[in-house]
Image 1 (cartoon, one colour):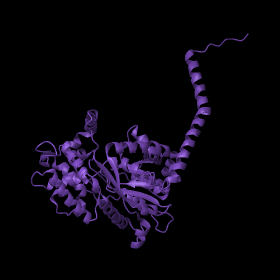
Image 2: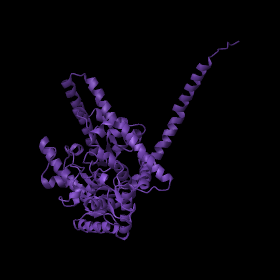
Image 3: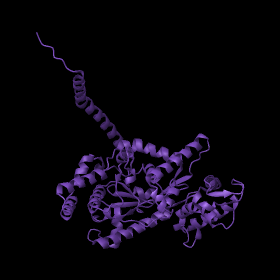
Length: 481
């Protein structure tokens, strides 16, 4: 007779779990992966049919393959060996550091997440907070971009909402890849941002090795036609005015550009403006050493308090959208034509000369962006209040704004205040400033005499400064605090 073998309950449970895992791994997981892959492929086919700028195969390559490609890029390996010789570190240690940088930078683009989840979220968030508008688009210029060109949207940086707003509004044109700072490297936001195709960068890193790895990733993406979005200013505007361009990412894109090569680089200028920037007070405080010492905990507390206040307003039925958020898309600028017209070969120039030409191009792009900045109600009303020497009635404010609009239109500015609803739009803008107590009235509403709130002129100046480059330099209201 056979003998009975006693098995402890815990061991039986382990064996059953291992058997279940084996069945899951061998039978169910491949089927689920196949279904997911099939759904993603269907999304890709559908999206690529309607996108003006197609999703390039490079973005669909497995992330691990891209990490390997970047970590063992010839120039990266050369830089790693030089770093090892300079610091005395073993090459294996340096290469491990290179791989860590590559893992950190390389995105994990997922078309399904981008167009089915990210697009839906971006649209809902943007439309919930603002009256979202596209002011002007050079549709013919966008259609004329060659299919094999690398398209780079270059834009001013007003708010962290810029990422959401432009990704949503440009979704009919392209799936954009952003360079995102370290602020977004928190769980679970990091995974979502990677899946949206963004790549993380350490903006203040001084490590030559890290900069080389980042440069090579940007070059790989550019050479392979990845549509990108770049903020030439390098960060958010702290006083509301346009900042001078930084050359970092643009230089990485251009230093190996061959004007006679197969793929052109086409920059599309994009300009953004808001009636309310969510971070306005935080940005104005960022220059205050005492505010910086408060650290991340204070920032989280302030953010929570802001949204809690908005939730209370919504619960009472008193919440109102934050006014207009408007985006203008300008005429594309092809690097090939720009370089040939000036006899520039970026590859042949020594570093300083190349950077000087990159700066020339960056300044031209910023000038184009500046000319596209949408003129909205709140910045105009803010300027009118700052210029006034005495309290004004709502009618007097509107008259001043009307004169500003005439002057700006004559200068070629892009006004987004529809004529048939101009009076209503200005009423909304004025009400927003009164609600936020940036403006005060002797009767407590728009029926009285209104003036800038004495303690908040700096915030009003922040909004007026968004139009500073469109107006004469001697305007006293435009001078930052």
